[in-house]
Length: 296
Image (tube, rainbow, N blue to C red):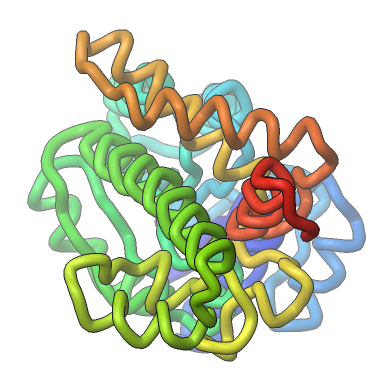
């Protein structure tokens, strides 16, 4: 099978490389020449245009920044690829754009899946991503080997845009829980509690969560967390803010009350405004510490 891969950034590049490792022929395109060259060094055939990248392929995967980019690229895709081509979008985008992309594919006679990911750049490189997939069951079943080449957990969430809905809800939980863990560590510091002591208690008690046990926002207890590397992402603060904004747009559209999600979006907006957009989102603990009269 030949796959066209559009968007070879921090996530897309490693994902395309893992497809090559799994034996797929991958033709890639990105507006960045340096990203194209890097992907080419890992076995991806670098193409000079989107049309070249999707010529003669069975499947096209897109990994792009936002809904407007996905819709622009998919508009070009449906004008280029033959009927029956499988179109997969792995971007994290708004629900309305995801639904529109599925509609565009259907009008062309193509099959489609929305398949946002969780796991960050480390998971993309290691091939351990979680895929949250929306689309028809039969299309999902046939495409599973493609996802297994790039990820560890492949979950069919329901019909069109269900994958995006799952991703938005999951990352709202993540944003809220990281703030809660950060607040707890700052409070512990004020009370004279060591980081390790709090971790040892909370990690085996009712406060246990991924933001604590896998991505602990203070150095020491979890050596692989970004806190041990000056909060280098990882998952950047700008991306967390993007996902929290998507959650609030979806909540407003659906009429769902998400007061903690709204507050998390507000706090991450401030975190970004303070110059942390390119730092890992777990670094928000430093902002909380400063607000508590401490030093980062």
